[in-house]
Image (tube, rainbow over the protein chains, first blue to last red):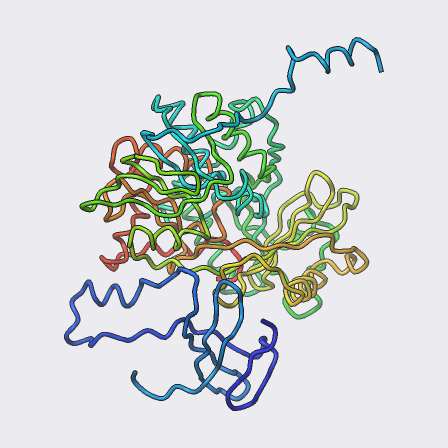
Length: 85
Length: 413
């Protein structure tokens, strides 16, 4: 992957983007137990696969989601976040 | 060529001695199964056999011996870490390194070079002083030195770094060394092999049989093995194995790239590291400049290498050593680094009984090879963590008690 398609700016060099990890639902901080919270804060799905990830196009500060195969380094699609799913 | 020699060569009574025995078949059961025939896995096998007398051990390797991060690192050995846990642990490792060639009867080309971590800012220099004090407290030879000492050790350096990040001083760690990394895996492998451990290359682990929270066996591409103890030492492939036993960890995988130049006459004796410029460099015994940078910026489970990396690293390298502008890059490659949030490894017991983990070695695992083998073999035998690794347990995340090893790779964090 050398070019990433920003939903706002179109295809741009990957050096313009910032990676912020997999999209993960946050448990309710008030209701979660210590174990659930620690799991959310620290644990990651480290295994390879197709993942939904947060990316940011830094020159325009555009945050969006990319679906990427982390084994083949191929981006399947990019789109804006549309709220809770 | 003398004829006698030819006759000797063709005589079946004197076959070429092999480093390792080839085993046609897997046995149906072993006392301990080690996944990963890299330095860490083979060292654990070696100490299991040598120090604990456990030889019914098999080491499974998907590829070939030392073909993962053992053969992809930049071979630096040092113990100038920041946390007390880290300093004690790595210092034990450096001591083990020093006798290893004799131990194996194999020349590891262990060369004591001295290691400079360069400071380009006041805050970096402050961290160096802190590290030096922690080190001295634990008897590790580290001191803060001025730029003139750096210049004396590496006369070709531009102390101003192209004018924009002048070197204010450095943390000097005299025991810093380099060694031939693949020979380390071979040495441990041969030592284990001679004591009866079986090494099976081209054997992939497909699943781990866990019943009632206990390890019962391992499914491999060459059949099923019954065992009660599995040690996982597979660096960048750790999350794949963890998925099989359903253990959650904070491990995430980013590639770490490195490159070597064409061989040149010896001009650089010490190892130089600059956190601000994201580079480190040493000169190998063959004359090649071995160079590395910081982690790739996003998760990837592959070992592709990029032009971006070479360009970025070369730019910074030329700021330090402008005279290298005509030197050619010969090879570049990448390894998969298993990173943790606190830059300390994850070692020891797991929630699955009989499943032991030696992981989270990210960008700093090579130097720890001997001590990991020692402490993990102890952990597997006693079913309790070795005292040196209690600070690295997987539990620390659940208990919000991180280790915070910022001295980890000196570059990029």
